[in-house]
Image (cartoon, rainbow, N blue to C red; front, top):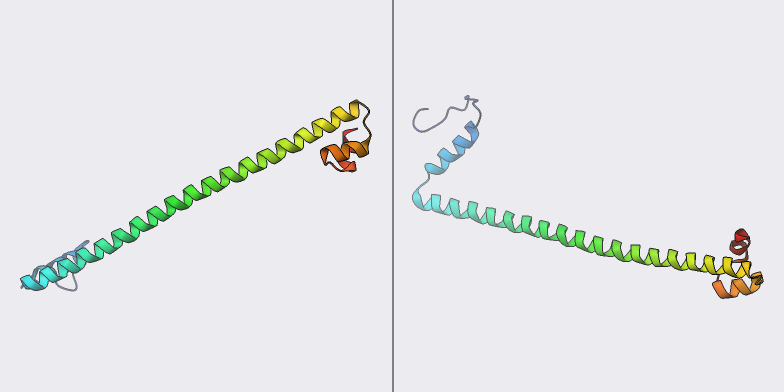
Length: 117
């Protein structure tokens, strides 16, 4: 290294970073201060973007979980109602109630009721 410069044909690991640091150190104080402000501003912007991304992912996950729970609950209720209607139909059949009446009471189709016989 001569005259505070790194030869361009040197290939050691980390040499590019060292060149960059050396170039910054060679700047005049006011230029270095300006450069460091720009670097800090860039880091701040990147931090804001990262924070927004993390927050967005968290909100998306929470919304997805909430929607999933709501859909699961709705589906569970529907299956429970359907199961109850089938039980009512079975009980009505065992009591000799005609299929037409069972259709009206349960909302099940004739085919669904006949499968229970």
